[in-house]
Image (cartoon, rainbow, N blue to C red):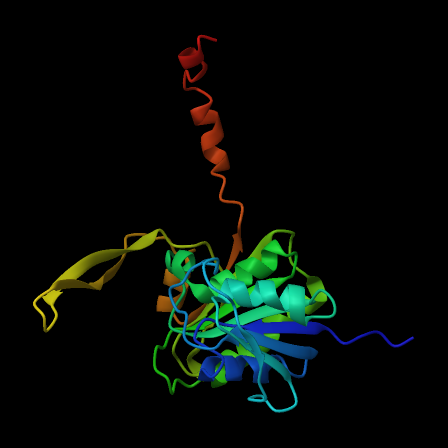
Length: 262
């Protein structure tokens, strides 16, 4: 009996018409049966938000011709939830999210809608990966990124991923010939040093515009930020268990029961 082709769910946060998701679809289309469920408008920076206060719309679209594709009015996490519950006929063998326009390295993983789609996939037990290209331009060149996507997707389909683990893949904005390779990394200890620019609207009311700069004080050569700065593709294994296991013994040293007289 002939086995089924791998089922691949595709999503993103830049919206279903973004060039990045088209590049992602092209990269994985030969590897299995592709189904797309993505936001109908950009949802960058939404993190793992889900829609609970208004109806969700899920509309079939022929934007990708012969492929099954749906556009969703919700967040990236909503897209994956709806895909699993309402669209797919079985559990996917792989979820790919992206290709994001811009980096999702280090602390950005917490804010990223791209990574939250992949995270939701991992929560559902689907081997999942988020891809990002370090180029915010709408007309970015995804040629090298597509090759990286295909290689990593093939490996996940073949080898799987540890339970509860997903991958955060960031690709430097260089040509294929200038890529130095792929590095398995840890997430750099870096953050946004944020400021809010105070402005006034035409009616004289104050409003604020988020500005600031990215600060990396992590000098390790095993981080995603180091890899990208040195033209390596960074691959960071991520998990959704946020327990700080190394802190449990420290907290057990607190005299918490004394409050209850025990």
